Length: 275
Image (cartoon, rainbow, N blue to C red; front, side, top):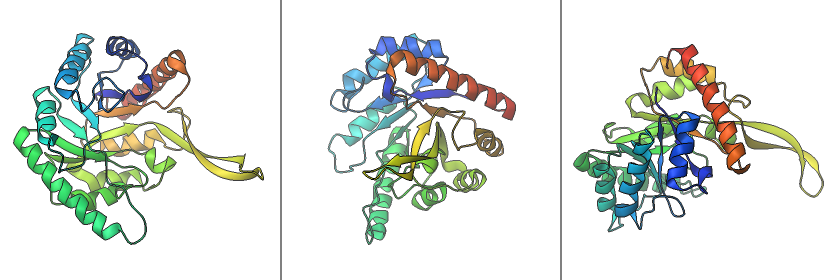
């Protein structure tokens, strides 16, 4: 199963340094970030994307997946951006997502999101690329089953869902992994790999013990990845897995902990027969 990385916290590296670092850790590929302040930006996509892809390929890393901030279907540059990603070998890319704006807004936001996905489905079919969103707190799609309501009826070749178990622990949306994977079926196009847990800590001006949720190392959080992979093995899904290493501890520390996480991940995959 292909293991790629969402390289958000490796931002201080050049693209060549990034490729060398990720290859040394042992990743198969990189999730191409199309965001301001990173190696590829929307404003420079035509130039920066081919250059970044070539650099990653030089280090033997795949670049089949991308994360973007695209969601505005009125953007006059949108179709050109989608075409550019497809022309550079991107097979699927993540949208910014659809936020929940507060009580009384769900129905209108849901309808708007469906219209947006319909537009992206047409672009995907035209250019041969899939568009997906991530289960994420604060959105209309915090869970797998909520995501299914949004994507139901669209062609899973062009519209998909990135299931992120740890977001459903750290943010909102917990439901059983079996049910989530079962519900998504062919819409499942990526699984996010990280971990999180709830902790009691003295917080606020009165230092009262309150629950807070934080990211953890992959082996130490509340997501039981053995359970996740046991459920995933029944689906026939074989990747990609996208690792998110949210460790703000400098490049050396980030690299070492990411290496440990990937080693742990591959051990669990082997146990589940998913390697």
